[in-house]
Length: 291
Image 1 (cartoon, rainbow, N blue to C red):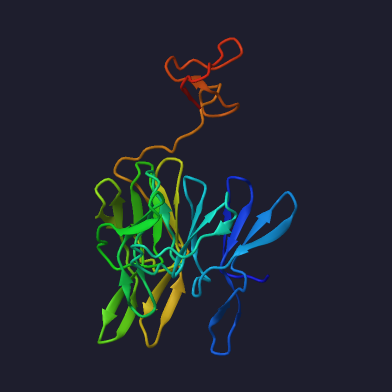
Image 2: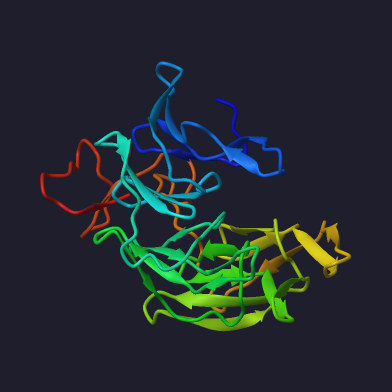
C-alpha cells in the first residue's frame, strides 16, 4: 500500500516493522491515514504481511525498539508490537498524559523511553514523560526550561539526553506563534530532571539532526528557521552545522580486537584475567566474559 511519513524499524529477528503513514490528501487538504496501518516485511520471502491497525490519528507515529525486543509505537495513542505474539496491542492509556504526535522517543540506558514534551498546532503543551516497559505505563518526569516540539533528542555516552532546539511562543488569547529557540538542555535520568547546557550558535526550529559521534560529541546540522511569525510567515532552510561538546566527553564503546586497537578481528576476553579466549585458553560454562 502507498505510504508517506511512516516509520520502519528493524527487529532482532531481521524483519522490518512498517507503521503508520498517509497516502493521499482529502478534499479539505488533510492527509488520509492508510487502511492497514502496520505490516511486517520479511527479507527471506520478500513479502509484506499486515499485522493490525493503529488508532485513528496515529498516521505519523514514532517507533522505539525496546530492550526486550518489543516496539513502542506512539502517535496520538500508544501501542506495543510483540514479535512473539505477531500483533499490535490495544491502545495503552494508563497514565498516558500527552499526545506525542510526530514525536520521537529516546531509549535510555535503564530501558525506559523519554518523550521530552510536545506542542501541537493549537498551542497545547504536554510535559516530559517516561514510558516503563515493565509496567507499560507513562509517568511525568521533570520540567523543560522551554516549551518544545520537533526538537532533537540525543542519548549521550554518560546516559544523559541532549535536548536541542525548537519551541513555541504564546501570544494573545488563542494565537500561538512559532518561536525558534537556540537553547539546549540535558535530561538526567537518575535525578529525573532537566538542566540548561549553553546555547546553540544558530536558532533551529525544525528538521535539524543531532548525531552522536564516536568521540562522544554531537553533530547538530541543518534545520529550518522562522524569520517572520504569522500571519506573514517566512522561513529559511539552514546549511550550517555545529558541534556540542559535553562537559566530560567519553568515547563511544568499541569492540575488543585481537590487535588491541579496535581494528581487525574481534576478541573475547576472560573477564577476570583479561586474557584472550582461544582454543588453548578456552572459556568454561558459567564464566564471565567481555567482548
